[in-house]
Structure formats: structure tokens, C-alpha cells
Length: 396
Image (cartoon, rainbow, N blue to C red; front, side, top):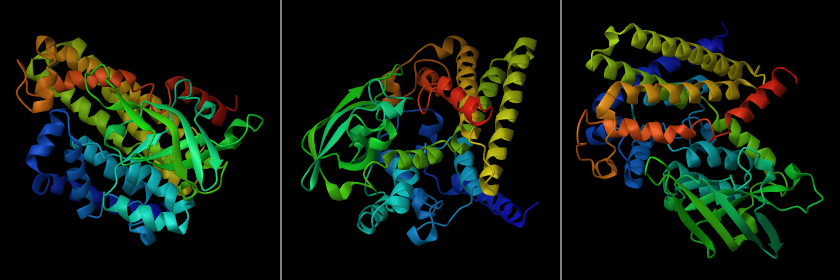
């Protein structure tokens, strides 16, 4: 085994132990309890969580040392996301620390780095991602939001959709079209940083079927964005977007979330005596085998990243397997809860009160089941992921 990988494994094992100890001794019990019960978390909850991580120097530990990170290996980064997800901790909101931060430190100007990176490290700005549009989701190159140069500004017009937590955001990193209609689609896309307080920015909520306000429409009507907020070179936004998507599709959090959901299913089945049923045992056994396969692929992908031997299809394979398994496990958990899985009290989820009947996380389990019906769509639909695998791996 390569000494670099051996060293990374040792550090990852130490990090895993430290994370477990942190959750036992330093994690606020109320926040951890609400997260494990799948309750609705507020912006303040997430900011508290991100501050806790940054106090441990974990929030941006995957960044280079010169930008305030620890230069974590892909395995350490995977372990960080995986272990917190397995323990039922809140989602590590990625838009600042995982998405736009690395784009800025790799492609941004010195002024942008000085302005934005310290605020991302210290969680002073809340970011949202302006990618998807009506008619341009998985086919992102078809986006139609325009940015027309007007002196020292770009005038931006268009609509973004499914924009997670835009209602909380201070800033939006946004793909826009700056070239003319004769330019190849990917070569006319640029990467802009837009202040959400700018005149002409309107956020409209989209309530998903779980009854919660996760996502939004963002309307951009003659929004004037300083040219200095253009990241890198005009027309090179597609290159920066691909770099970001590579970060987006790292697998630690998804693998850990599936493991946590599978453990919850086994608990629900055990509490109701359903593990005595051969049908239930067979179903859970199938899920366990699928999870082991998912976990193995994820670790192989991490090792390929460390050896620089990726084939381009790993992230897509993990996305397909994890999202489909997560949906199946969530559905089985609702079934295992029986009648106790039926009540769905939004007020209880928002206020932290007890559900009408059943275990105190029953309504949250159902909320997650509803929300994750979209897991095979967001972040790149399964059909698109299969096309990527066909091209990158099979050469079709």
C-alpha cells in the first residue's frame, strides 16, 4: 500500500474517533436530538452547527492551508461527512465551504479571495447556488439567464429554480449566459457572485411535498452586478461549474445518511417484532447487501481520487445507488412504523412538540420519505447519471 494512502487512513481513523467523542461531549443535546428526530431546523440551528465545526477547524479543513484549511485528503473529507451523517447530525450546508469557496480560491481574483474567503471560513455569509432553471436542470448548459455588460456592471435577467435556502442567503453564486446566440452553449457561460440584497432580486418559496420550505424560485430582474464579481474569465463559467460539481458529488454524506436510515429501519422493525418475519429479514438483508456494495464503491472512488485514476463515472454510480437505496429504505421504514407512520403534523415538526402517536421521530421519518422522492432527480437525475456512465466508462 502506498505510504500516502496508509498515512491518510491512519488520520481518517483518528478523525472518526474524534467525531464520535465530539458528539458525546460537545454537541448541544437539543440540536442533536432535533436532527435525529428529523425535525425542521432553523437558519440559527445551522449557523450554530457550522460555528461548532469551525471551532474544531473542521468546517474548511479540506481547503489548502494557505486559505485557512488543513489540506485534508479525500479520505479524511469522506470520513468527516460520512461519520457525522451516520450519527444523525445536521447536514453540513455545502454552498459556502464546499462549493463556492473552493471555486474562489482556485479561480478568483486576489480581491475576491480577500473579500469572501475569510467570511466563508467564519460563517459570516450564507450562500445559495443559482444553477437550475425552468427547462435547464440536469441539462444545465441550456440555461437562459443573461448577463449583459453595461460599463462596470453586468445587468442580469432571468429565473433560477429549486434554489435551496435562498430565503436565508446573503449571496448567490450564479451561472449566467454572457455570450451571443452563435457561441457554443458551454462557451458563453460565466460565473457571477450576486448580492441577494441587490435591487431586482426576488425570492419566492416553493413548498415541497413534505410541507417544508427548502427550495425557492429566484427572479433576477435587471439586477446590476459589479464586473468585479465575475469569477475568473468571462465565458469560462462552465469550467468552474464542472470543478464545483466534482466537489458536490463527493459521497461521504450520502453514504452516511443511507447507513443512518438503514439503522433506523432495523430499529423500527425490531420495536414492532417484525424481525421475526422472514419477509422483513430478507428485505433488510437485501438493503444491507446493497449498502455494502455502495460503501465499497465509495471507498474505491476515494482511493481513485487519491491515486488520480478516476474514470469519470464513479460519482454518477454512487449517486444512482445511494439515492435509489435511500428511497427504498425510507419507504420500508414508513411501512415498518405501520399506523404510527401515518400522522404527519407539520406544526409538531416546526415547534419540536410530540407527534400525535408513535415514536417521537415518526413524523420526521415520513417527512424525509416525502422529501427524498426527489433524491433521484436533484443533483443530476438518474437518467443523466446513467448517460454519464455510458459515455465515461463504456465509451458509448
